[in-house]
Amino acid sequence: MTYFFETYGCEMNIAESAAVEQLMISRGWTKAEHPEEANIVVINTCSVRGSAEQRILGRLGYFAGVKKVRMLNPHTKLRLEDMKYAAEFAKKNGAVPLNLVLMGCMAQRTLDTIQDDYPQIDYVVGTFGKYKFGEIIQNIENGGKGFKIKDEEVYTFAENSYEQGAFSTFVPIMHGCNNFCTYCIVPYVRGRETSRRVDQILAEIDFLTKANVKEITLLGQNVNAYKGEDGTTFPQLLEKICQHIDETKSSIKWIRFESSNPNDFSDELIEVIKRNPHVCHGFHIAAQHGNSEILRRMNRKNTREEFIELTKKLRSAMPDVQLVTDLMVGFPGETEEQFNDILTMMDEIKFESSFMYYYNPREGTPAAKYPDQIDIEVKKARLAKVIDLQSKHTTEVMQKRIGETIEVLADIVSRNNENELLGKTEQNERVAFAGEKKLIGTFVKVKLTGLNGNTFKGELI
Image (cartoon, rainbow, N blue to C red; front, side, top):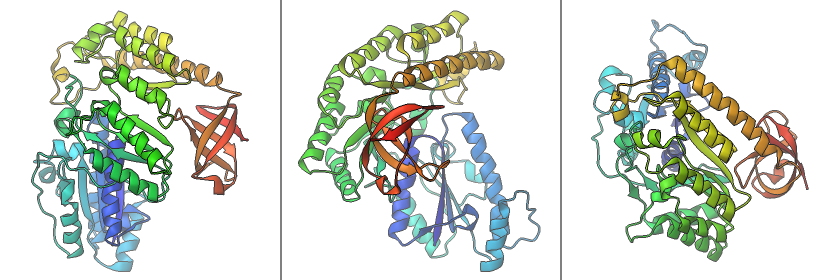
């Protein structure tokens, strides 16, 4: 039996796909080279933006054709070049059904209706129904047909989210969000915050140590709001993980975490990071906007001034820190003056990079009903200004680092040069340098010598 995953959206989706893949591997399944040749295709979906859902709907239409070809339907038109894999598979193997599974946030949002609209889907697995994959896999192995999966209210964490052979991996520690930002659909598809037990997290770290993993990223929709059932806070959890790594002489050297809410980035957390060398000094903290009134209307819990003060605290505690953020333009009612507050905040903080986008109404969220929606052309023009300024800041910030000798985790061979490796810095930047493949999965010293776009060029020391 073979499988194939198409994963869209955030790191949590990547981790959840990896966890389901582990289950399939444990049952002797192997990854298909092409989705058109698999026994099961799992599409792990995202609902954060409407464009992501439209792309997924396009893939559902495509796989409807693949399923017909796989069943030797002579009336199916080969509209896309990739359909040839399905046709060749059908000719070689006969009529073998393809089982199509929709999982993730879009699946949760449309749980009760999507199969009626897209009958090519065999199984719909919401964010709370992943534990059903064992039953789905067994049903496919037995030649059964798809079935409806009941929605659940309790989120279940997988034992591990390890991708085989990876030196860097995700460790989910909490799920859901209680913040209800007025533009965001996450609380509606991921539910309320649920934190994983400390012993389960440490058990996964032990598993990853045996797999020789070198770097982990602690994951949550609001990761630093973690609170264990025993009252453990996120700073306390981070301290425990660092101590456990040292006590067990783990292969894990670097710890990252995301996504961080500035409201939960406490002074205690900064102190824990400062005294624990395992915690990397690169942070993704979503600002979303630079105007306090817009932040209030977004239902963010911090002001512009409080966010800027947080960045100052981080840089005072860790002078080598690099900051990445999210920036949204065109929120309903945003005036030109309020928009300019994003630009002045960027100039003051100088983020190394940003995820930049214009406001996209999501059905079911309060902001989608706000009457003062911004014209799309205005949003595009404002976004272009933010992108241009961020590009300038990125080059400026990265240029200052040229000449430094730093530690790098070598992880893959460069696509552009087989004699060159790509690695990542503690600040989560990419570095290309000449090196032998045997260095992959090890920490090496590299001198930063230049820039190629947003990737450092370096020399192995």
